[in-house]
Image (tube, rainbow, N blue to C red; front, side, top):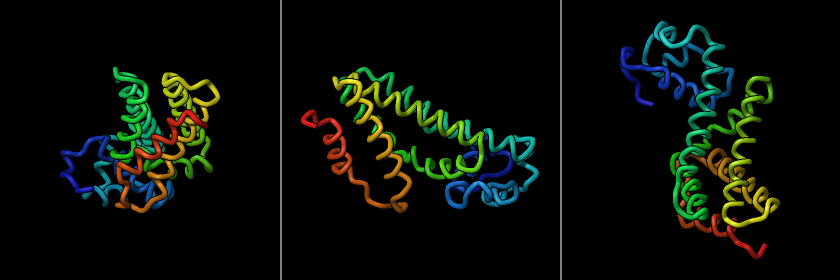
Length: 186
Protein backbone atom coordinates (compact mmCIF):
# COMPACT_ATOMS: atom_id res chain seq x y z
CA UNK A 1 0.00 0.00 0.00
CA UNK A 2 1.46 3.32 -1.07
CA UNK A 3 1.56 5.85 1.79
CA UNK A 4 -0.59 8.96 1.47
CA UNK A 5 -0.12 12.29 3.14
CA UNK A 6 -1.71 12.45 6.58
CA UNK A 7 -4.37 14.92 5.51
CA UNK A 8 -5.43 12.60 2.68
CA UNK A 9 -5.96 9.49 4.82
CA UNK A 10 -9.46 8.41 5.67
CA UNK A 11 -10.89 5.73 7.93
CA UNK A 12 -10.97 3.26 5.05
CA UNK A 13 -7.22 3.69 4.50
CA UNK A 14 -6.57 2.72 8.10
CA UNK A 15 -8.89 -0.27 7.85
CA UNK A 16 -7.30 -1.51 4.63
CA UNK A 17 -3.85 -1.25 6.18
CA UNK A 18 -5.11 -3.01 9.31
CA UNK A 19 -6.51 -5.87 7.18
CA UNK A 20 -3.16 -6.24 5.44
CA UNK A 21 -1.35 -6.31 8.78
CA UNK A 22 -3.89 -8.75 10.21
CA UNK A 23 -3.41 -11.00 7.20
CA UNK A 24 0.38 -10.97 7.29
CA UNK A 25 1.03 -10.94 11.04
CA UNK A 26 -2.16 -11.62 13.04
CA UNK A 27 -4.28 -9.48 15.29
CA UNK A 28 -1.47 -9.03 17.83
CA UNK A 29 0.42 -7.00 15.24
CA UNK A 30 -2.50 -4.67 14.48
CA UNK A 31 -1.34 -1.75 16.60
CA UNK A 32 -1.37 1.98 16.11
CA UNK A 33 2.35 2.64 15.63
CA UNK A 34 2.96 -0.15 13.07
CA UNK A 35 -0.14 0.93 11.15
CA UNK A 36 0.97 4.55 11.12
CA UNK A 37 4.41 3.48 9.93
CA UNK A 38 2.84 1.34 7.18
CA UNK A 39 0.77 4.35 6.08
CA UNK A 40 3.68 6.76 6.32
CA UNK A 41 2.09 9.02 8.93
CA UNK A 42 2.47 9.75 12.62
CA UNK A 43 0.49 7.71 15.12
CA UNK A 44 -1.34 10.90 16.12
CA UNK A 45 -3.28 10.85 12.85
CA UNK A 46 -4.88 7.57 13.96
CA UNK A 47 -6.93 9.50 16.53
CA UNK A 48 -8.67 11.54 13.84
CA UNK A 49 -10.48 8.33 12.89
CA UNK A 50 -10.55 6.12 16.00
CA UNK A 51 -10.68 6.76 19.71
CA UNK A 52 -8.58 3.72 20.60
CA UNK A 53 -7.41 0.35 19.29
CA UNK A 54 -10.55 -1.61 20.39
CA UNK A 55 -12.62 0.78 18.26
CA UNK A 56 -10.32 0.01 15.33
CA UNK A 57 -10.85 -3.73 15.91
CA UNK A 58 -14.63 -3.35 15.86
CA UNK A 59 -14.49 -1.20 12.74
CA UNK A 60 -12.13 -3.70 11.13
CA UNK A 61 -14.61 -6.54 11.63
CA UNK A 62 -17.48 -4.41 10.33
CA UNK A 63 -15.41 -3.39 7.30
CA UNK A 64 -14.45 -7.00 6.52
CA UNK A 65 -18.07 -8.15 6.74
CA UNK A 66 -19.45 -5.24 4.71
CA UNK A 67 -16.76 -4.98 2.02
CA UNK A 68 -15.97 -8.67 1.61
CA UNK A 69 -19.47 -10.13 1.93
CA UNK A 70 -22.40 -7.72 2.04
CA UNK A 71 -21.35 -5.76 -1.06
CA UNK A 72 -20.77 -8.94 -3.06
CA UNK A 73 -24.17 -10.29 -2.07
CA UNK A 74 -25.89 -6.99 -2.91
CA UNK A 75 -24.17 -6.90 -6.29
CA UNK A 76 -25.12 -10.51 -7.08
CA UNK A 77 -28.74 -9.94 -6.04
CA UNK A 78 -29.02 -7.09 -8.54
CA UNK A 79 -27.84 -9.29 -11.41
CA UNK A 80 -30.73 -9.64 -13.87
CA UNK A 81 -29.44 -12.52 -15.97
CA UNK A 82 -29.86 -16.27 -15.59
CA UNK A 83 -29.05 -17.79 -12.16
CA UNK A 84 -26.05 -19.68 -13.56
CA UNK A 85 -24.55 -16.41 -14.79
CA UNK A 86 -25.13 -14.87 -11.36
CA UNK A 87 -23.09 -17.67 -9.77
CA UNK A 88 -20.36 -17.36 -12.39
CA UNK A 89 -20.17 -13.57 -12.05
CA UNK A 90 -19.92 -13.80 -8.27
CA UNK A 91 -17.14 -16.37 -8.48
CA UNK A 92 -15.21 -14.20 -10.93
CA UNK A 93 -15.71 -11.07 -8.82
CA UNK A 94 -14.54 -12.75 -5.62
CA UNK A 95 -11.51 -14.34 -7.24
CA UNK A 96 -10.45 -11.36 -9.35
CA UNK A 97 -10.76 -8.83 -6.54
CA UNK A 98 -9.32 -11.12 -3.87
CA UNK A 99 -12.39 -10.48 -1.76
CA UNK A 100 -11.79 -13.61 0.33
CA UNK A 101 -8.06 -13.11 0.89
CA UNK A 102 -8.50 -11.96 4.49
CA UNK A 103 -10.88 -14.72 5.56
CA UNK A 104 -8.26 -17.04 7.04
CA UNK A 105 -6.80 -14.18 9.10
CA UNK A 106 -10.24 -13.24 10.44
CA UNK A 107 -10.97 -16.91 11.16
CA UNK A 108 -7.71 -17.19 13.08
CA UNK A 109 -8.55 -14.05 15.07
CA UNK A 110 -12.02 -15.48 15.77
CA UNK A 111 -10.44 -18.43 17.55
CA UNK A 112 -9.30 -16.21 20.42
CA UNK A 113 -11.82 -13.35 20.44
CA UNK A 114 -15.56 -13.74 21.02
CA UNK A 115 -16.53 -10.62 19.07
CA UNK A 116 -14.46 -11.72 16.08
CA UNK A 117 -15.96 -15.20 16.43
CA UNK A 118 -19.51 -13.83 16.38
CA UNK A 119 -18.83 -11.68 13.31
CA UNK A 120 -17.03 -14.49 11.49
CA UNK A 121 -19.85 -16.95 12.23
CA UNK A 122 -22.55 -14.48 11.16
CA UNK A 123 -20.67 -13.63 7.97
CA UNK A 124 -20.11 -17.25 7.02
CA UNK A 125 -23.78 -17.97 7.65
CA UNK A 126 -24.70 -15.11 5.26
CA UNK A 127 -22.38 -16.46 2.61
CA UNK A 128 -23.63 -20.04 2.94
CA UNK A 129 -27.30 -19.02 2.91
CA UNK A 130 -26.85 -16.76 -0.11
CA UNK A 131 -24.82 -19.35 -2.02
CA UNK A 132 -27.47 -22.00 -1.34
CA UNK A 133 -30.17 -19.60 -2.54
CA UNK A 134 -28.26 -18.99 -5.78
CA UNK A 135 -28.00 -22.72 -6.48
CA UNK A 136 -31.70 -23.17 -5.66
CA UNK A 137 -32.44 -20.42 -8.19
CA UNK A 138 -30.36 -22.42 -10.68
CA UNK A 139 -32.70 -25.39 -10.19
CA UNK A 140 -30.97 -27.54 -7.58
CA UNK A 141 -32.98 -29.02 -4.70
CA UNK A 142 -32.32 -27.65 -1.20
CA UNK A 143 -29.73 -30.27 -0.20
CA UNK A 144 -27.83 -30.02 -3.49
CA UNK A 145 -28.00 -26.22 -3.35
CA UNK A 146 -26.65 -26.08 0.20
CA UNK A 147 -23.87 -28.54 -0.59
CA UNK A 148 -22.80 -26.79 -3.79
CA UNK A 149 -23.06 -23.37 -2.17
CA UNK A 150 -20.84 -24.40 0.72
CA UNK A 151 -18.34 -25.98 -1.66
CA UNK A 152 -18.21 -22.77 -3.70
CA UNK A 153 -17.74 -20.53 -0.66
CA UNK A 154 -15.07 -22.72 0.92
CA UNK A 155 -13.26 -23.18 -2.39
CA UNK A 156 -13.06 -19.42 -2.94
CA UNK A 157 -11.88 -18.82 0.62
CA UNK A 158 -9.20 -21.49 0.37
CA UNK A 159 -8.00 -20.51 -3.07
CA UNK A 160 -7.84 -16.83 -2.07
CA UNK A 161 -6.02 -17.31 1.21
CA UNK A 162 -3.85 -20.40 0.87
CA UNK A 163 -2.24 -19.92 -2.53
CA UNK A 164 0.84 -17.72 -2.58
CA UNK A 165 0.39 -14.12 -3.65
CA UNK A 166 0.67 -13.83 -7.40
CA UNK A 167 -0.11 -17.50 -8.06
CA UNK A 168 -1.69 -18.10 -11.41
CA UNK A 169 -5.45 -18.44 -11.09
CA UNK A 170 -6.39 -18.83 -14.73
CA UNK A 171 -9.99 -18.20 -15.62
CA UNK A 172 -10.18 -21.55 -17.44
CA UNK A 173 -9.44 -23.31 -14.13
CA UNK A 174 -12.12 -21.22 -12.42
CA UNK A 175 -14.50 -22.09 -15.27
CA UNK A 176 -13.75 -25.80 -14.75
CA UNK A 177 -14.60 -25.49 -11.05
CA UNK A 178 -17.79 -23.64 -11.93
CA UNK A 179 -18.74 -26.40 -14.39
CA UNK A 180 -18.16 -29.04 -11.73
CA UNK A 181 -20.43 -27.15 -9.31
CA UNK A 182 -23.11 -26.84 -12.00
CA UNK A 183 -22.92 -30.51 -13.08
CA UNK A 184 -26.34 -32.07 -12.55
CA UNK A 185 -25.11 -35.67 -12.88
CA UNK A 186 -23.89 -35.72 -9.27
